[in-house]
Length: 350
Image (cartoon, rainbow, N blue to C red; front, side):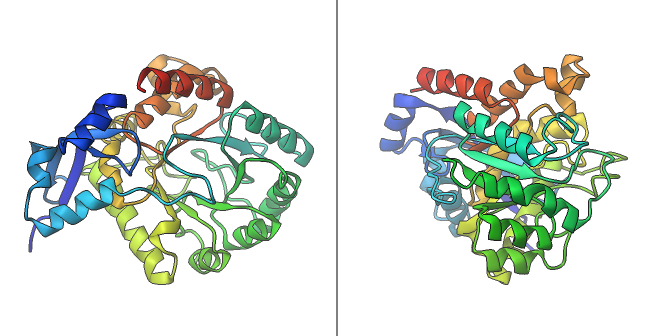
């Protein structure tokens, strides 16, 4: 049995430097975007038993190894648009929690009117996507009945149908997925990667909508009790690769999928940092990447800030770290601040 092969792009380049290096064959684009990589960490073996070495991209690009070339193609290929939204530039997904108990803003927008007004404001501030959820998945949260969850988000989706932003339904239940799709949602975002509800794969296929698959270890109620991994980065990659395969087998094509490493979902501070440091490895999944680190507990732990609503600076830092590794979508609470940071980052990096 051959060792599992992983490739982690490193040696990132931006702007004119990236364009010149790509044209000269010294680098390649991440997901067809503007961030390029000039080196690759080649990792072989099982999680916890792997070995790695670094190579210049030009060396690997000339290799005759078919499996290596196939993985490089997945890393570099341009990503399909998300519900008509091109992904050749970083996109912002604004969080709209229609809940009384979300970790950061629970209860602030738990009526349809308040949630619609908040979502419209996020769109004006620069949100390309609005992620509307009716069930808190914070650590320790209990499940919400599907019918009640749908009652929370359907009126909001219906009330936002005229907005310029793409509408995403944040749910792990098939019944809610169907209701959201019927109401006009453009994307389904499932923190369980279509595993929580046995009917979710069928609902996702029937909807014809793009789906975000997120990694989580355990259920929200217990996921932070004692999360353990041999190698969190490789294990998250393997899990998401398996979920992509399950979707394809069920009739949901890879071109309709997005992956999210699930920062804070069954991960310690160390796990979260290792994922953020190695995000570029996930481009090997061959789908767009979404990063949701906004206001998460690890930021508060690092910065000594217990108030989630005062973690915008750390959230922006995490978002920019993801963008610097070619992440296509950042999911945030503080849209205006993140848009400003991205505007400056893009200007500096050409």
